[in-house]
Amino acid sequence: MEFDEFFRATWPRLFRTACAVAGDAASAEDALQAAYARAFASWRRVSTADHPEAYVRRIVVNEILGTRRRAWWKRERPTGDVPATAVPSSEAAYVERDRLWRAVLELPPRQRAVVVLRYYEDLSEEEIADTLGCSRGTVKSQASAALTKLREHAGLTLDSSGGDNA
Image (cartoon, rainbow, N blue to C red; front, top):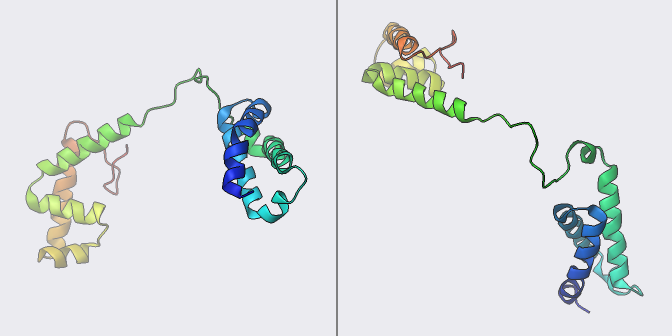
């Protein structure tokens, strides 16, 4: 018997068994995937066993039980229940980042270029001066003016390095 024929013939029964042992479909599928991968890797030995399905069933059950013994199983477990506590949304960070970028877009073009090159591209003052064709002093004054405008803009708060606190 070829492996693909064996797989198609045994999957439904082994899946039911795995679900019953694991207690949920996701863990059963994970265990079956690992078991069939192991069986495929040693197919010559599995196919010549007296009962290949029993051989793979044992691999499946051992996989489920071994997974439950591992430390991570004690920490996370698939469940159909929604946790009672809400997971904090990252929406506020996106909104704040969007507000910051909108404020940057309102800056005069040279100040905007300095802010983008310094804080987004992480270029040095010298590199920015070379890029813009101006002196380092101009870069410093444009950056200072831009940061002042950004701090005043709609309650945006920036740390001392110019990054946002969001």
